[in-house]
Image 1: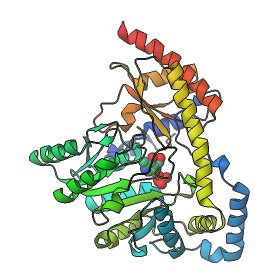
Image 2: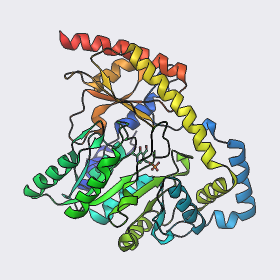
Image 3: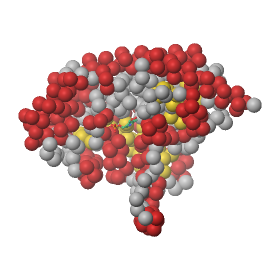
Length: 413
Ligand SMILES: Cc1ncc(COP(=O)(O)O)c(C=O)c1O
């Protein structure tokens, strides 16, 4: 509750930048508050299941770092990140098949979220255009909005971005006088759709962007969380000069540490990292040291395998429950990895309104509109299978299915 007198609060409203006036709390945040109610089944949050981490070991590592290297760990550090972690990030990327990045091209960031912010700061003026999938990550849409950038959707299907649609969209937007700066894409297990860009489309997407003079911002926090199928090459490995790659420890280790990174084409690197330094001075030294020790002292690849086993069985539990209980009018994606399944309901059902009924019925999800640059996703919703166990998933899907059946019947009449 504000304690400022009414007149002062009105005066301050008048001081707000145009940018700030456009910033709003995301629906994911709204629902986050609700998800704390233990009587509800939350299929909303994309929180990694941290109970599976070797917490005692991480506790011992943290204590050791502070007692033995406290003055360094608690000090300001380089804006680039520690050299040790940047070197280890090369190994993490190599595990994803990215072997064409040099140490000098890696900057540690405050999560991949801040790398998105840095990219906007470096490349976008108000009124510029960026291209993206529809649906796409709500945090990126919020960043675009904060920089007063137009987020324009490119058509997708079950195999991700459609290259011909990308080409046509670029031509159309340019004819309308728009200045396109980059394509923001989540090629692996998109948040929220769970869809992965088909291998054979990747070369084409990269080629179109390069020829059209449009950068690619490749956001890949879920790439290593694959439960079936073959990994496709990252866009960065296909075109190191035209792709800024964003990685994160949030989903493969711990989001609370707020550590991610960007691999930036050499000729853009200085500008990119200076933009980050201007916001945060440096990524947190202690957290980088904890991650470095974790990567060094723990078998982190086996840990990811453990995670993948757990998430696979949760995904399967959700797909089974959807198959069994969902009304036939509802379609859904079948992700090979990541955290999310995307449901499409008949036209005319607004999932934002449905969420209020969901709270009463004891199940919550994220309404689709939050993720849609075009505003065409009112009849869609996102479910997350990462954070709760199989029995809870089954219960949540049953509650949701009953709710959807009622809504579909009401919508048809
Ligand atoms: C696609 C995508 N990009 C970026 C982020 C943010 O990641 P980080 O915690 O590294 O900032 C998320 C988090 O959910 C995400 O889903």
